[in-house]
Image 1 (tube, one colour):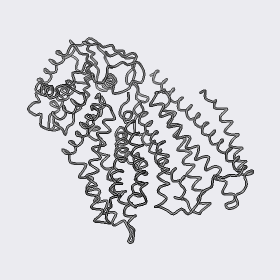
Image 2 (spheres, rainbow over the protein chains, first blue to last red):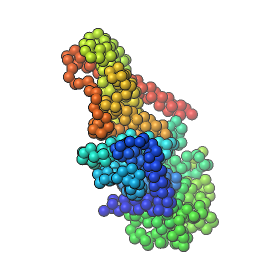
Image 3 (cartoon, chains in turn blue, yellow, red):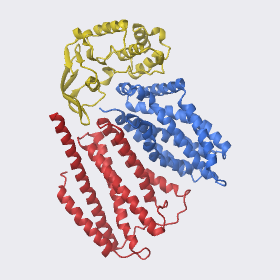
Length: 212
Length: 192
Length: 225
């Protein structure tokens, strides 16, 4: 199908760009490790497993933010958003391609972060991994949309956390709840979040990037 | 193909242009002249469908048949010419992509560097790649903003030839150096 | 829908506010536990509900803007959200005062409503940051409209999240005001709610009129230049 082929071409473009530049993923990896180290010193003695889990989610959200801030840089710096928007493909394909690429970067960072967390604090179970996977989808969906908004204005990187964090609060709730073993409904909630905001972002991206 | 009536564009309180009328058919060539900062780029963006006019009527063909070259060549610097054209060829559903890309790269003298990152090119070569990108999908309406920018003598001659060859298409060209394309133009718009 | 004229609205708002204040302080029964201070409930909840109405109205105008593109929808959406943030701040303020009076703390995480408003407050403040970081024009209008829609979807999703977070963040210690109200309480509440909504409508028309006038002035100046 043409749409999927467009998405694939765009995602491939983003992955290629990162492969050449090698900026975002190494930064995310280093950031998440540094953050987890800081958290070791930030947690008082006797702090429980759940407290540490909470900090894991904080680390993941802020690492994602780091990646998302860089997501539209090539398009912004070289004016390429014009070229993509003018192409006859559906504008939502631009969003989806970008989401897939950022998802890949975040996944790579987590491949390092989760084992590191297990080593620094306590073992990470299957529920946590499932929660992280589901949360990643929501983070990337909403983050890519707000990333495009942030890049269009003057404040750029400054404004992305402000736009993104309130929307990320439900994700953190779902994620921490699921990893703390408070019940399967937290995973269900993450699925709901992904579905609702994913759909909204997919449908509204067109209006964020084009004037006409 | 392109009709604009009483077009105006404002950014907040600042008016960039107003009362612009354009009527362009296949074979037409609109030459937009004026010094830097006079609003040519904004007009071209509106005529390409990138920016919405503040008021007035605008009728444009579908995106598939429009080709736009902005002030920047609009190519990814971290990718090679081949990868760039492959991407846009895919997005514009260009038939027989490989052949067409090869033909354009050869024509604009980029075949030998097709596997090198665009970031290593001179500005003139990037401009040539930008022109290849614009021509890739054989657009019927070409909107070119300062296309002779950064081109050396050979590149400029190449562009001249191309413009002459494609005289059956519709063109909107902005330049602050109009002598080159004067003879091709069917209409003129001068910005103060 | 023909808008109600501004003087009529302003008059109605004044009358209703006066009525509400008198009812709250003289008519509604004194609460057995909390006494006089409990009366802030009659302001806090109507203000909160009015804030929701503001955000919903703003989102509706935003949807209209994206869908049918009527001329003034972006401005109307912005004004509604602007007022929503003001009412939202008042909600946080009155909620905080109520918490201090009732439970001796300046902030009660156990109050779901209050936490929701904190999240929404953050979200809609970001709306303003977005609006001021982009130059005015169709691009800004589109982006703000999309963000306003995200806001209105965030309301139920956040509320659900906050409810869910109960079980692992804080044990539920305090119970908030129950929905059962006596007749006199209900009347007072309704009058107060009507007053707040009319106040919103008044300020909405007022601010819109002012901003439209500004825009006209600018246009005229442009034409003369």
